[in-house]
Image: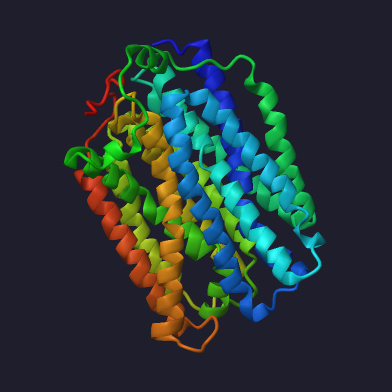
Length: 423
């Protein structure tokens, strides 16, 4: 089966766009400590303020996922692909100048709203890219196309780690913004999906977000699609973003650098995306691959939270392994896209990963509450609080994810040229 030139071009542009997307998405976690230190945030408040800013970004992604998803089905995949890149690029470029404010309060207000706006922008690129590639690729090879988009794109986190380590945090934000704006030049030669154009001409109702909830069948497909991805963002949003605090609580022999933890994990995620994408094609099953990854993640959660008196090298190695085990992101988004018809596909493929990312405020709130209010009130970075909180929140996310993966429809090789019947 020959892959068309339009499909190859869409893969390249979507992969580069996702590279910049991931760079900007993870950059805050990498520069969280140095940027907040520059602004004058006390060390005792670093975790709470960092969580607040992360929650603003993820809430923006939740809202942006709905907006961009609906636009993707109403206005086309390309408008979302490039519109989202423009918005998050401008927001991250502006983020470099939050230290120009006179007071800490003013700087934090600017920081939180820029993270929110960047989150809205970051919400659109992946879903639009995956939808476009899925509809342009032959169904027998579709998994390879989405594998390349996600596998290469996730390396943006490694680039963010290197840039965050070599340059001041302000420069890191500027580089991210400029990369995104330069990517817009590549708009030439990218074409809209033929499936979408045919659907648009048919006059069928498109991009109805609420229709996902007025049918029990559609709602369950949608819920399962979301729950499959939540464990991955528990690992990223809690275990890795707060790796500095976990290292202190678990007795690491050297300080853990969150930037390195993110970089090593995302290097593993990239390898995992290529591996799981390849295995799903060879095995002819996306569900089996996801279930296997989630079983491995239960074992790794225990290893992570029960380790003590370890070296930084051990911890970073564990981050790589966690990355490989959670490298089913491309498979997860592809499953979501394949569950729904052309008239709702962009809405689903864009909202699902952002609802997963938007679960981070829920996960961090539950984690911090259990840590600081239930298990270790009044203590900072204590194993007495962080370990049981991690087990409860992570265990719940993994069990729900396994249920969803076990019960969702297998979609490998499914013909995507169909429409949802929306009343």
